[in-house]
Image (cartoon, rainbow, N blue to C red):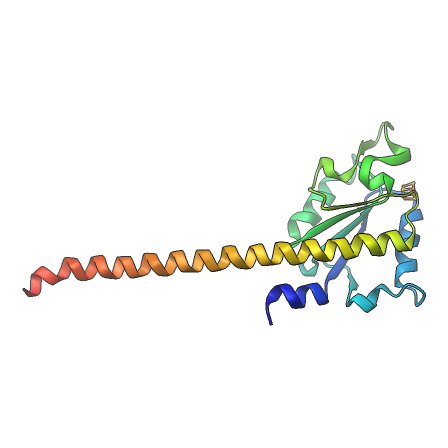
Length: 174
Ligand code: SF4
């Protein structure tokens, strides 16, 4: 089975509150409850960025957490997808313009999916995650293709080197 297929079927999510009011976080927890049961999509809420495929961020970027947010994002392996969950993560929301708030998370890391609402409803979060899965599949396919092309280029270069060496040593035996 191709990497894109199984990654899409069991994405690991990292949830990070960048400085919100916890309203969106409670809705994310509701998604894990039996009523919404987000795990039916094969998802696991993990605490390790190095094993995560999707970064789900709530709350705006504040001066205290901006480095941490960038660090978490950098630790995630490629391909990865970022979801800005709620008005705060998308634009700063109700905290926009405050002395300690720097706005939406897209000021510091690239965002693939914006989920609106304050707080976001579980249905909106699930919808955002399903969008993220489609993006994750596309990014995985692109990555696979670039790895394949790189391998082909290396193989061609090796063949060329072998041919050049053969051409160099040939006159010595003729
Ligand atoms: S979007 Fe609303 S509910 Fe969510 S963290 Fe911001 S203020 Fe709280």
